[in-house]
Length: 195
Image 1 (cartoon, helix red, strand yellow):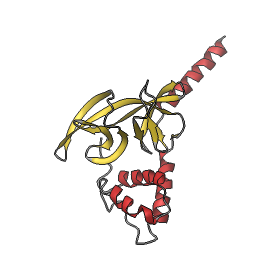
Image 2 (cartoon, rainbow, N blue to C red; image 1 turned 90 degrees about the horizontal axis):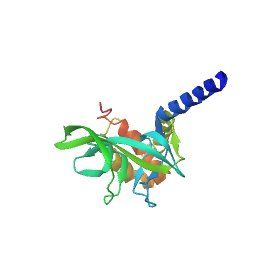
Image 3 (cartoon, rainbow, N blue to C red; image 1 turned 60 degrees about the vertical axis):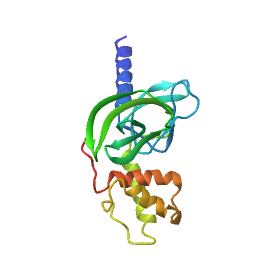
Image 4 (cartoon, helix red, strand yellow; image 1 turned 90 degrees about the vertical axis):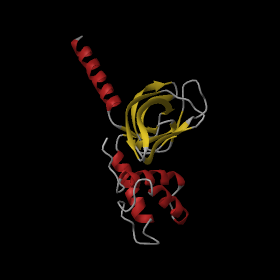
């Protein structure tokens, strides 16, 4: 009897630690709200999520980030840095818990947490391997036509337009570009942002 109780405690410990471990989106993922069959937004690669548990054929997750006051459709990694964690359809009203707020760039930014459903696949606990893959993609593709830019050459808000303007000249797919942009933005000259 004692061995069964011990085994159950070990399983509970492992399960709890798995839920509390850092988990990241490994690709662009659709976000859903309960009772709504259509996607209401997208989660971007490298976004850290908290796994809350199964919900039928999907998993419930909690995302956190920053929104500009009055604009909940874009959840950002840091205030006044256009590093998307998730983009939510503008017509979608979703619940979020708000935390501290800061002024940055002449705007008010609010830290939030929100719950969504998404597909169960496409997560990783190894964000460093995603960043390594993005770095290799950057080094391989972005030095063909010109000298490789230093990842600190531009700020986080400049990198998306830089990459998107040159994307058609590379072998990088649109899906891969999301990861590459996240990598460059999070390593930009005005990062890391101190939370």
